[in-house]
Image (cartoon, rainbow, N blue to C red; front, side, top):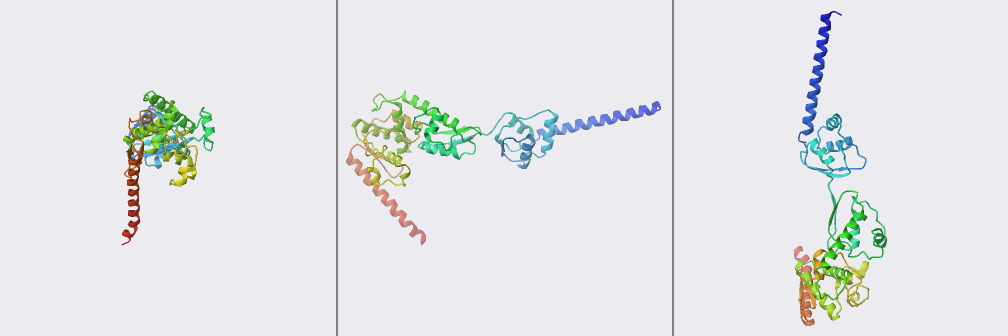
Length: 353
């Protein structure tokens, strides 16, 4: 081949090579720009299941309208030898997040935490139902007896009622019910120990567990924050005098599944270990999971001369020092109930006109 031809061929190859390099550079620049460009979609929640590949996750993002070109993102990751660590769970993807933003969420493990909420006054059975109903909890204890649950937690022989602190527990998907219950147990133990150190000096009981029992009664008697220490004060006064506590929530707890939504006269006279109308002293165990305010009320009750309280029908209670005062307040409450019932009976007729 003549020298001139060889030179022309070499020049053509160099030009082609340069074009390839330029095209590759341009393509890389486009991929880089696309990787960092804002996405097209609104904020979404992406749920990643076990075993999903990066390609499958990108396809899900495309289906949600968050990633416009999933294959380009996958190519960019391959070219840059990046293999994002995608944990199972739910990710909150912000509106217009770029692929770079989303991959950063994966790399940083920003899985959205799930939560289970147990309100003060709920029972241990309520807590277990909340856990059983959560699809994000690993169910290790579902179907086991309360005794088996306590044994699994390392507290064999303990009655579970009242032992778990009511709160909102946030957790990563796949956390076991055993772990969450252990967390709630430890929190209640810590709270109870802390408030016990702050107790009044003249309480008519001697142990933190008795304070826990009283706190559970206070929790069930009122939802009014300002009344908790007053309620505790009444119960403490009755304990000092040897009077029965006569607390309806203890009767309801003792009835269990037999409670039909109303307390009947027969319920008050039928003896159970929890019937504080037929038995003196505190119930044998708590009747609910008390919150911090009720724990504090139980160990720091108000100094009061009151021995009775009755609902007012307006969300609070009327407190009395004597039985005569209490009976008068009870008559006012019963009259209020009658008026409410009469108003309810008249309402359908008025609505039909």
